[in-house]
Image (cartoon, rainbow, N blue to C red; front, side):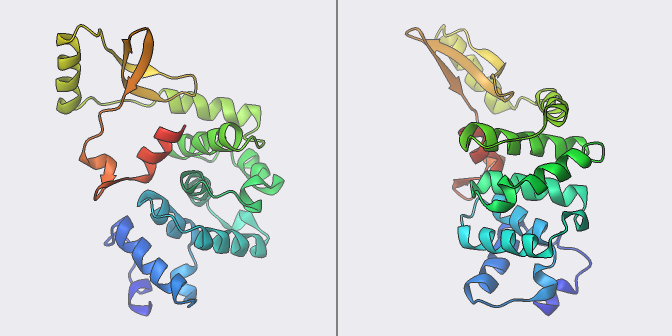
Length: 220
């Protein structure tokens, strides 16, 4: 643990590697202050690598609540925490509590565009999947606009898939916007039923499993 935290940052570690390190300490019931001081990076790594470990997320939530001061976290950290819990689908008092929503409201002008996209995904998780209260209207509207306006890039793989769908006379519609704001790679209609097609290349996966972003999009 000491050798790891002496590094100036953890960029040398992949999310999978960082998650494995934290998991090893958690399962051994060991607490290393330096390794665990940045809760947002820890759970972001878990969520990005799509490693399900609810016990660790609960411990992180409890630790943050014990601090009793969310203002200690940067805006980036707050957004990472919200997104990580949405990906892990781990509901807890921290996420559903009024204090967290108040921080999001008060910080609304301090989040960058990536943060706002993360927060909108958190909002969808809270309201659509858990039926909880989400972002306030002013924050939600800003985050949704940033989310739906995100640029999309088509891969050669997607172009090939669309080409084959055209050969089949399915008249594919590319980058179809869903009511939630997500952009489907392709939408086709088969026997009167609309079917979404996601063309997921290697960067959507870690090993053979979908990464956190891919998993969250599939759910929402």
